[in-house]
Length: 217
Image 1 (spheres, rainbow, N blue to C red):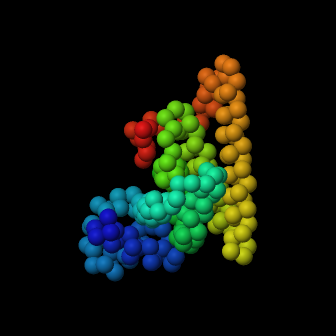
Image 2 (cartoon, rainbow, N blue to C red):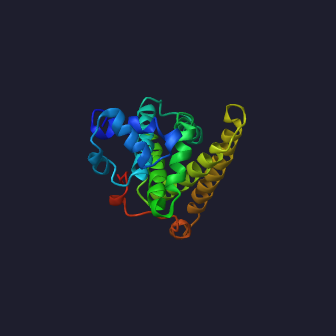
Image 3 (spheres, rainbow, N blue to C red):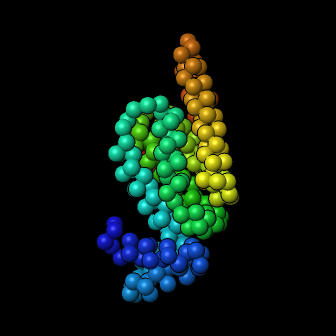
């Protein structure tokens, strides 16, 4: 993507986001900087600021996937998940994320915002080697999506040194998730409880795998 007009416009427009917001003005300014014809803007970013926010978010996910590919697949899953979420957040620009969050919070963009959180969770689980094929494929991504979203919101308002309060908040959320997964695992070991556990936790659903960035392997 890096040599395309879309990538060029993304990079240039992001320079204007702190001043203009995540919107058509930033895209127009970026197009001027890169010498891209104004009539190409709606072709490259048909949803305007929402697509600009999505482009920045997905670029971060690609960078995270590359980072995960270079990590050793060893150690506790809890620690690896925490490290991945920290990597994803710590290497984001807070002002750009804040502007993107404001745009994605609009009702018309709510579905896109939820999908982007799901994509990040999917990137992490795939990068960690998750091979689940049952309801756990959904529940892992749904619960991690919620953790990432809550942690990003906390981070946006965190003025503590080195965002230490954000990482403490993240640790607590991960502990909650791991406790939930541990309870499910213990219940499934009881006679006759596997099916009931799937039913009890099956409310955590997402669109069918063909509509998602990942897939059931």
